Image 1 (cartoon, rainbow, N blue to C red):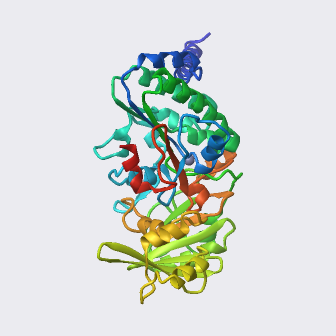
Image 2 (image 1 turned 60 degrees about the vertical axis):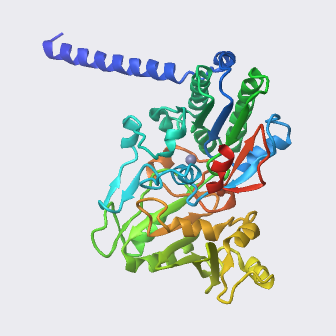
Length: 449
Ligand SMILES: [Zn+2]
């Protein structure tokens, strides 16, 4: 063997060894066998309040399980109506009254710097939790590398996540222990409703063990940060539509034709960034595309909503600390609120200009498919994230927008992100008290205290 081929051989062997070490390390840290760790929960006799957020579990699913007799120690689950877009970054910021995040997802368009911030880069760094970040509430949080692998090996990652949580809880000396189980999201995106039920039953068993290890002398609160629609989903062709309409879809805004369309997770909403003059034209066009439910943009104080059948307008005013919304049907009724608007008006809830108090809208729409839409849409265009979209698009269940490569790798059995109730209604339940049937996300903190 020559000197050169010997060197190549050594490099190859070293490379192979690195891969083996990597695989062994990965398997060790993602050991899904948590049954043995469960015995350890008896060690903790200090924690009196255990708060667990399970990523994206919809009220509908937990309520069905509860009605079948699971989660026995808990009171009836309440609906938690969360912010739009129904994405963890956005909804958790409101739930924890935390400082607002830069973008809707880890990949986002930085408006100020006029560039795309990559989402993949985030997974290669250690998690940095700035003061005010909602992550600071958690005593256990899944390490960053598994946040992405959960979409490749959902069962293994989710069970190892639970194992790490159990181990952290077992040795905790805190009276209040708070955790965020993020990996339930992967179970649901990849394995659908069956995946959700499978992992929830595992969580039910786990919580039962914890609760009884303390002879019921503790409170456990379980909640989720958004809902989920269990529909096998296809990608919407937003980029093609924008290109065929003559727009230049790119990673920065360079001229009057430029449009930035971040595409990362496979989710039920899309954010568009473009020049002021393009907003109306684009918002008007996209509802014609298969899978799009509606689009929205803000001009001055008015929100313009476009559905397949036409346009409506949302206006807001505040009188004596009371917030009021006006829903004005221009050429269509994209939120299907016509009947509600008429009945609230008949009941004398509208003022001379047609504004109706926010609380009346909430009561009238809290179980509607476009649940609490006026308030949630208005918030979405009032500085909800630092780099707020110029146009937001909400998709129908069964469709997603996102990274083309990810959508080839994975079959998606459901997603979230849109304004529809399936995506927007999470839950809250406690072993100590029954909360009201409907809670707005910004009120949830009162029940977590
Ligand atoms: Zn998700």
